[in-house]
Image (cartoon, rainbow, N blue to C red; front, side, top):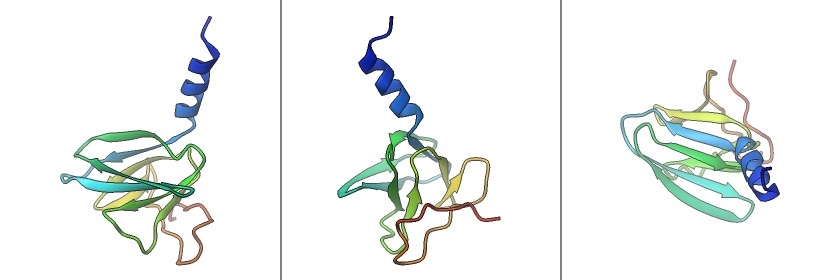
Length: 107
């Protein structure tokens, strides 16, 4: 029998977003969940898992103008300094003032 706390932990991680750095250089990824902001330095091919469980904003390399908005279940990659949905096109940063809406992949 699996303890309940372990099930909750596994379920939460499965429902959280992830970010993989596919670039040849390191990137600083800032995760902003509610009022909490945390920076992570991702080296080439490093994966940041279990982020944005309830949705968040992500900034790449300190870009504080238009953060990416995630719902919390996306699998994303950094390529060319931009954030992409895994297997899709780049995520589009919302226009200034529209940070409450999730980013949508471009057509």
